[in-house]
Length: 323
Image 1 (cartoon, helix red, strand yellow):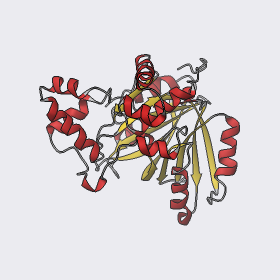
Image 2 (cartoon, rainbow, N blue to C red):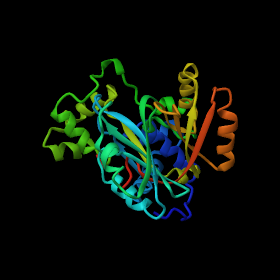
Image 3 (cartoon, rainbow, N blue to C red):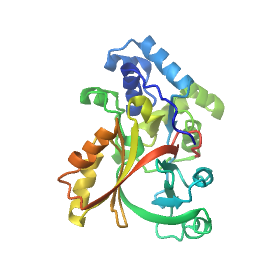
Image 4 (cartoon, rainbow, N blue to C red):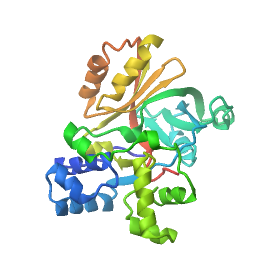
């Protein structure tokens, strides 16, 4: 899992076009170009190049049953065995996120499980693995920001608003309604920008029917897309997990403040010693220092642990991501 290769940072126009896809993964080139002041042909050419070389992937996120919760795991591993354990976890469908620490002895992972259950991974499989020296598990109580909600901070608020697909959450049923909804979303799982005509052909459905389904799923907030891109190519070289301890009466306000911070791509209230977890992307160590010393000041933090990520092994849209 080597991570020392030099990563080329994308130019500002490509970064803005990626940010447009974060706002709406299926937005057309003409609309994006109109908002960003770029010719539609240039938008198409740039997107085509980014998508073709794998620098960017736009995926549709699967619906997660409300009965499933999430555990945040910190797994201490014997040096030299980290790759093996991380690969085994990456093969599991119930583990959508895996990071390994820059120190080489810790794995951070998210495991989906029924709240309150004796999850086999936590209670039997990991403890039985001799390479694992300790496991700490925290149950997610509330998500302030999810990964697909993060936006690269290179657009103006007006541009972001103009590019974002409006939807009426009050009209959403909370889940796809029937087999065709599920089938349409499944066709977009690996590439959310597949044209409606191609989806229709694959499913043996009229194109007009598929277009209506896509429109409704989008309007109801059920077609969620995420842009998978190496943050280092956006100039964000440092990936870190920041674990915070706060008194209960400061927890909600602190979580909301973190969710509004442009560096935070995940923020969760959890059980355990550290009751607020934040995943952050920043340009360099100096920016990380400013985040923990300045941006967190005034939130009521009584204790903190910061772990720099050496490699993001599995996240939605990554080659090892499943489902």
